[in-house]
Amino acid sequence: EPHRRGTRTPFSASAVRAGRGWSYGIAQYENDRIDWYRIFSYAYRPAAVLTRRDLDVVGRRDAEGQEELALFPGWTIVECKFGTGLVELAMSPDALTGFLSWLEAAPPGQDVSRVS
Image (cartoon, rainbow, N blue to C red):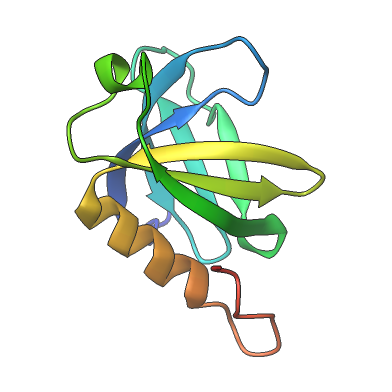
């Protein structure tokens, strides 16, 4: 297997479907996508693949209500538009810095103003 470039960064992401709670996972950053794997899963394939060209940050917020019990203290929830839908990612301050840097590091010719 060829060497895979990227940095594994833990963060928590909500399921896209309404009514599902927060799922913890590990993100593998690749050049143009994030492969997200559930921690409590035997699957070899990522549970979600987020492509940079389809991902836009539309807001940030702190955990509210029951979310405060489900997430680690100090984590930020990032609200993203992904294609025609929405996805929320919760992550530590360090993971957030890495995520935003990856999002802004688009190759030449791509729209780099992906963070609002």
